[in-house]
Image 1: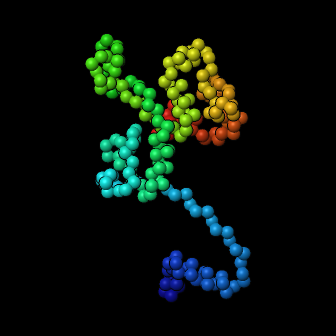
Image 2: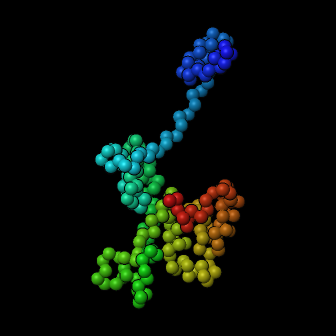
Image 3: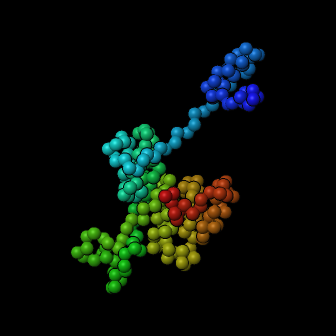
Length: 200
């Protein structure tokens, strides 16, 4: 019985105190350098809160402006970091809304006079981590001239590294991927389809 009761765990604060006391009485140990502070994490709050309940709330498009997607943060620094990551490089190119029926005459409703609401079209809304990847997405996905050039066999897929660093173009994304791994030391697990899908 005594053996089992002695195996009860001590509280963490008690063990730190006892270990520091025992280490001070024993031989001096080499001083340990302080460990770096952990990276702060984003904090999401309860979705039932309203924007006025929390001081740092994001409601920017394309993701945080949707119904029931209130995104709140504990500090202003976290909010600014979130906005820099998810709202700075957003593709605003109009694309066809597939949930809307196609007009019978084939003319996009956005271009029909008297239709100011632009039904049948929406923004792409994909988010990218930097301007370079947003530019590549717009060229490879939305540019009809680039798509025509690709159909003729021209190389339209540029390296992810900006032009002063690398000016190579490729016939397909697979060759660009191989180039990025071999020449620029990208990890094989990198999400190379980021130019199609974005980060969100």
